[in-house]
Amino acid sequence: MEYQFNFGWMIAGLVITLGGILVVVFYRQISDTMANGVSSYEKMKLYGVITVIVGLLTTSNILSFILEFVFRLLLGKN
Image (cartoon, rainbow, N blue to C red; front, side, top):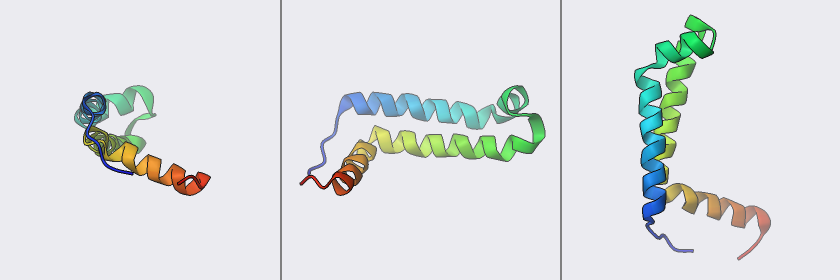
C-alpha cells in the first residue's frame, strides 16, 4: 500500500474544508436556526472544527489512505 496524491480528492477536500470553515464562522446562526439555540453553540463549533480537520486530511489524500488501511485490517486482505 503506497501513498498517491489525487487531484479529485484534493478538490473534494477543499470543498469539505470550506464547508467546515463556513460552519465555524456562522456557528451562531446555524445553531439558532437548526440546533435549539444557545445550548449547542459549542457543539456546532466542534462539528465545524472536526469538518475542517477531515477536509484537510481528504485534501492531502491521507484520509483514503487511513480508511484503506483500516478496512484491510478488518477484512484481512493483504
